[in-house]
Length: 72
Image 1 (tube, rainbow, N blue to C red):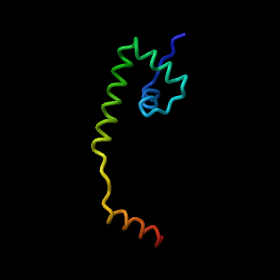
Image 2: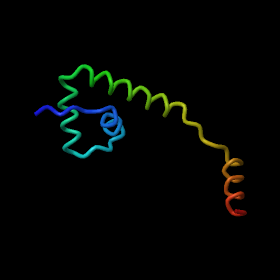
Image 3: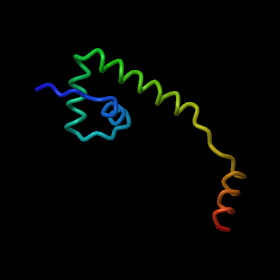
Image 4: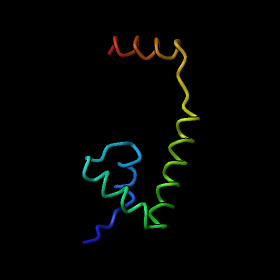
């Protein structure tokens, strides 16, 4: 039986959130399904762009948030 994978499955796979058996099934499917390969490449590209544009807040912002949280 051939299992079909959803975009959600591919996102979980890209973030290494699939079980060992799911990972093996997805990797087998990626070998022979060009459409699935395209979906994975697109998701991987988005993840890479998000990671590259990740901003770290300044220490002043962090301190302001923590001080506000203490007051509440």
